[in-house]
Length: 265
Length: 277
Image 1 (tube, rainbow over the protein chains, first blue to last red):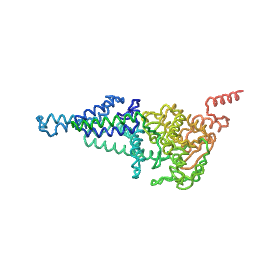
Image 2 (cartoon, rainbow over the protein chains, first blue to last red):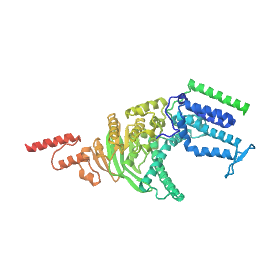
Image 3 (tube, helix red, strand yellow):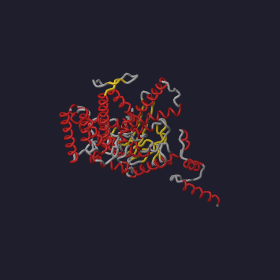
Image 4 (cartoon, chains in turn brown, yellow):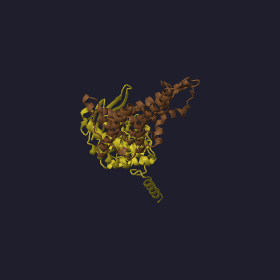
């Protein structure tokens, strides 16, 4: 089962970059995206989109990843469109009485674009980086916190398990739903109370299944010698020349955007 | 050598006595089938072999190490690998190589050695081509092989497999059995839980459990000879074994050790011809 946003095998230069560079770049560029002036964020978002396309992520995949968040995106757009305070010409929409202004429309476009760009940045990271490499990068960045007795290795394993169990849980939910439909076809009906009853009973079955699985998985991990504390990793992270070049380019680009921001922002 | 001496185990708070005085010796490189009706204690027993469960009384010694001593657990668990019934409950990694690496990573091996172990385990299970694949895109049979590879990467001396061919089609089940045979030939001790008597017949030794006790223990031929005792606890022999056992009961000497239908048919034809002459 493939889910939009999960790792897609590829050989692009972005796929080959060190995961630490990608993680730092995506976090850095996302902060920059929210920091710089709105017109500049259009430019940075477009650059991220171009990078995603270069990384082999096509527009169809991006659309698939955006689809589950579409309601949320429309809501962000609508809130900024109709509730933006401005002094320019305002037209009140008939019946609803909501104000509409050109600056509100601009604001809505900018905010929605920022949100979309953040999504593209996240896709760029998850679709071009193996989960194990991503977790190794997170672990590398968290290493200094070991001095504060933070269980860095355990956090990395937790992350790996969360990623692994997500599709398993979705499968469990689908199986439970199918089994219920096969037996009684949800006779509770389509009323709100009926739907709530179905949801609660489904949640109960899935939760029981999840707890059973968690118990078995914990036993299986123990059987394979998992203990809290230090582990080694099969992921090799080497900063090659291309990674160093990428760091320099990204750093220069960030400085460029900051300079533009201070000049025109 | 794994030695179980008068092992008792009770599930609390249900108060179910799962093991009631099990004593067994499992030799190095031995291929043993563990059979018995549901709830007889097979899974509970193998969970004692790598210290996942500890006996309420009695002892389990693995290569001379007592499983009750927690200081020995790391050594015992890398020596006795455990393949669970449902691979989805065992596989930790998102991709095949990630999962196979999990055990060696826990052993804190260096990266180069982990990579060697991954390649070796995948080659031994014949799934080197699946290395980078996402677990969610694998078939049930492939997931079982990944689970076995994950255990092999720890280079265990014994492997306990809980119904490794359950719910698989004959081809996938055959592939798993071939790998188990190969591992046994390489000197790995195999403890194989199964409900399939034909699979049990292929091992060196069959241990039948009933109500938490060892009910029968011996070579497959000797165990399968006791048809009535097996049927009394709800176990049915494979048809061919049942036929030869019934014939021998009736005083007709038919060898069944190969389990090959052609060979048994030839023996019967020869006997009939003898009678005819």
